[in-house]
Amino acid sequence: LLSVEAGGSRWVVPATHAVWIPPGVIHAAASHGPFKGWSVYVAAAAGADLPAQPCVLAPSALLLEAVLRAARWVNDG
Image (cartoon, rainbow, N blue to C red; front, side):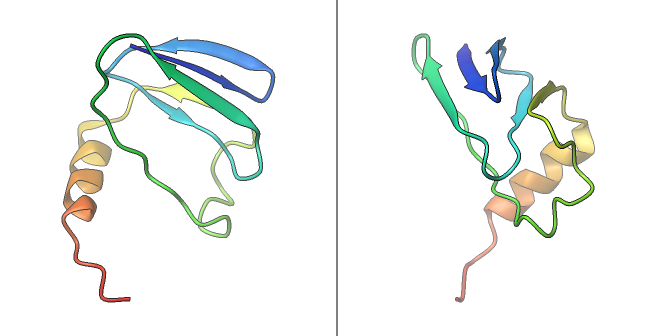
């Protein structure tokens, strides 16, 4: 379980959900117990069509699989 504060909002986020925090938004997070998870960072230009405000969302199976696959990519840069 994760508590997240961002953009004047506060949520308790279950493990099955994700939090979108746009670039430049001050935020904080706290784990309640052991935490296993990951973060995905999106370049500001690539996220232009994403919400302007922080929000909690339930990711689709397709999004989860895409992130898991991207996490296995080798960074040659």
